[in-house]
Amino acid sequence: MQGLADGYFVIPYTIGNYLSSEIFTKAIPTDHPAFAEAEKQAKESAEKLIGVKGKKTVDDFHKELGKIMWEYCGMARTAEGLTHARKLIQDLRKEFWSNVNIPGSLNEFNPEFDKAGRVADFIELGELMVIDALNRNESCGGHFRSEYQDAGEAKRDDEKYAYVAAWEHKAVDADPVLHKEELVYENIQLQVRSYK
Image (cartoon, rainbow, N blue to C red; front, side, top):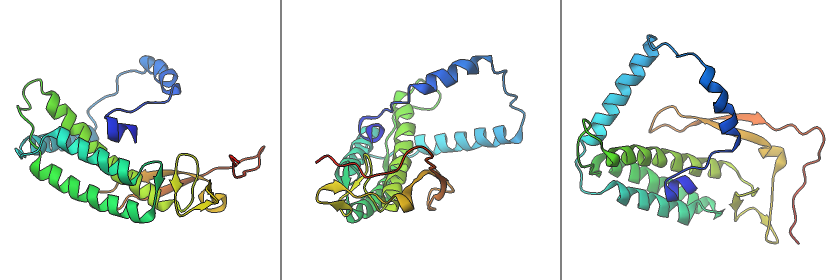
């Protein structure tokens, strides 16, 4: 949510520890065909993005996405609002790729182009967050679905949703595929938290 509304992400503190040992990893060879294909796709996407020459700024799209996320996929959400948000984000993505205006070119220092790439990613991530929120028919942690509460308290469904969700992106216009990693607790009993 913070990345979509404010434009940056906060990574877990443990990532630094993990990355600190990566300095000893030898250079990875780039002669594999996957590298050439990834480079080709990146160039094509960059040329397409810079070539749009529309009328709205990158900031216009970023603010619009932030507003959608704030209104419909914030701390409290509903299935109706999330469904509406998904449609709004899909429409925003179509407009972004046909009406964004990025001044300058690819052959110069271009912070607006860099920002446009991040906003394109935020649009994809925003839709994924909405899809994930629609998929969970419960209230748990920072995810509160207004339809799933008991006297104002979060109503969890541990039997159906005790898993970590990993979504696999297939294509822009295709639904992502859900992969589940079940959460297994050996030393504690899952129970609903009450603030009363």
